[in-house]
Length: 123
Image (tube, rainbow, N blue to C red; front, side, top):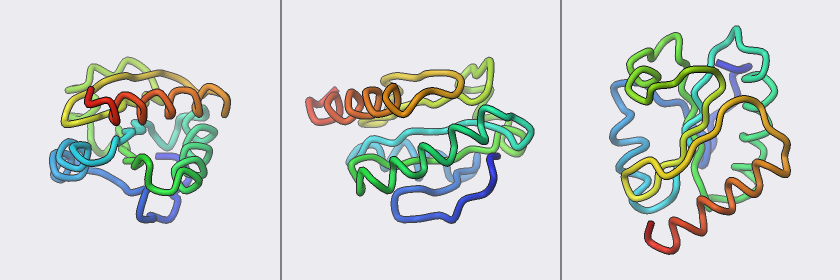
């Protein structure tokens, strides 16, 4: 996917094999944003580092799971991804929101804040 970033406590790579445990199960406790993209996708290379920085800045309020769509086509297919990047928010085991394409930091903060608020409200 985007230029590979070093995994941290809040940012990690996900594959088809560990998606259920890494995303669905972990979203029971903490919201998880799933960033689905590809190496060849220019908007993915813009969005990925920004999401990574925000995940570190939010210090565990949400987790960021990176999915390389070329290597994990079933994840993209199961989520009916039509373009890259696609970011899908999971809370309490289910998808609660999504967006497509690169976005501004302001948009991302509003999106993330909304996901965190909905997770805290039990949605």
